Image (cartoon, rainbow, N blue to C red; front, side):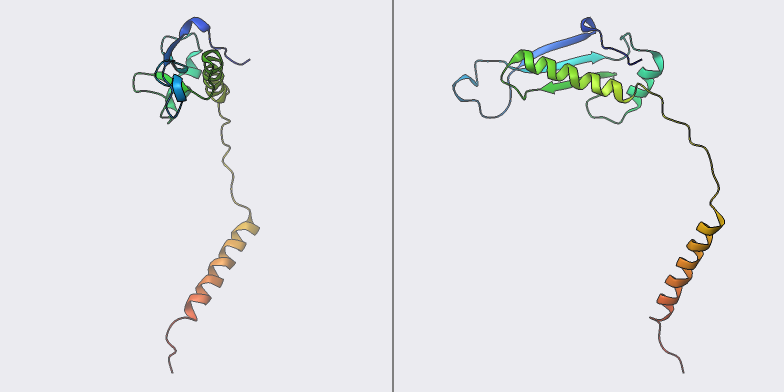
Length: 132
């Protein structure tokens, strides 16, 4: 079951978008800053820990995720885009990573490795000075 972001836990702020915009550039605030506090959310504890452990520039040191959406000219579409990106980020850490089972290298792989090392050594030996 994937954890769902509750709408009341998300804070939207309308801002002016960057870039060229024509006549409305200084009048209309169509871009969106989404702020989501991980610590105060209803997400399960393990999901919160995995989310905060990500090395993502969108996550502040206070545990707040900040997403900026300005791809569309519509404020509502930018809100939906930011919410979808937040949900995708949460979905990426929803399942715990599989534990790695330690295995030993096979005998054949060990022999291949040693043959490769011997071949490389012979190549380097051939580059040395010739002695009489």
